[in-house]
Image (cartoon, rainbow, N blue to C red; front, side, top):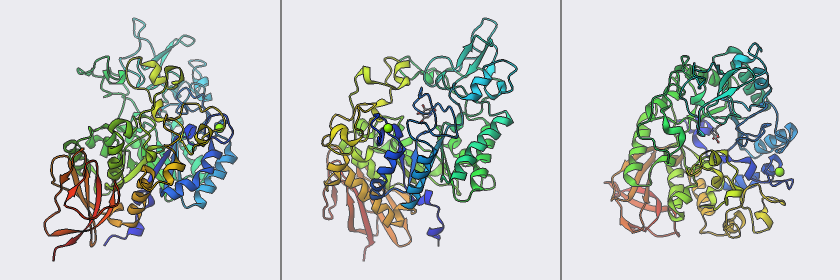
Length: 532
Ligand code: NOJ
Ligand code: MG
């Protein structure tokens, strides 16, 4: 019998992503901050999550809204200072929650002192901390690598006559992780925050950190057209997922483990087999949770989702643990993508699958499409690829807390507009409404906590009618059947042989009695009993 209590919190628990610029402002500058997060912790306790991961809060020129770090061991003044951080961490722990920071190892800001030194001269001791290469004989960039935000990944530096590599903006030069001094400096960054008491890290674009030493051209993607993301013009064969990066990831894990129970979550986009390698091996483990973004990327239909669940489950090594993500500051809002009725079903899916769920702020309110006028857009990705639908601002709008001015987010003008329906779609209104998305999310989180079958049980897909996604979660004597109707008509569903439905534990619609049919856009959690 498994000892459930031996299961670490990151396997049983739910992670909640806070985008700090947009969670809660405390000083009226229209941008969220650490004191704001602290003020809203009780909301998160009520919601029923276990850990918060906060997107970067370090000093930053904000070219990529914090993912361009100018100093890894301090707090951006807009967000607060180290004392405010310590207060927040104490308050988080006092509530029994965990706090994860966002570690951005692939690149720094071009304003980081390391880069300013590196670009100062070719013989600066920090020159090799970044990736500098000569021009091709024709003066062009060293190879065909493309920035994830469009354009060449190489920027010419006239002063020193070389190109430097940037997988993202030119304001985000890539560090050279083959240099042992870089590795040591970054290990010290992890130690700095672990010593302060953080419970772990989400690691930004972990699979990017090492590049092929020969810098060959990446293969061209024959299916690419200018209408899709510029990033996809080439396959990132030589610029990502190198063997040396796995060794570094294992070193990061060893460092985290030396602090006791700390978790590492890697941001990694790869097909299952390559993705699962980031768990490492039992002898030399890597990240605890390689983020699994497949619910974001998969078409919303039963056949595709069944395949994704089956294939992903099959790829997890015996010592590994699955996880699921359905929204983030980079992806379109789930309710914008599939509509509000199905977003409720999606929440049930996320919170009943086997594996740690990550919930993105605002998805618990079902925030959908937000219309942001061009002149209020802020995301560099939007401006760098005109006409391609890659802007991320629509998922980064401020949390609507109540019906007061600026939705209670700020006394000043918010840095991005609110969702248009904020006077009714906000925490205060939904918290008082038994039928709201917020109440559903809270109820499902409580259910997940109360039922080991949901948090740690096994999962088995169940054949059902078309449009109905169904699976069993089982632990010891308890059998729960999850039935999700992805269509707008009602359906019959199948109960596995030898079982009857005992109780309806949850519905995405109003509370209801047992029925052999599932309503349109409904999701159900059913407790089964053996037939007599
Ligand atoms: C992934 C982050 O989630 C995204 O917001 C950022 O732009 C890139 N990494 C670069 O750091
Ligand atoms: Mg503020």
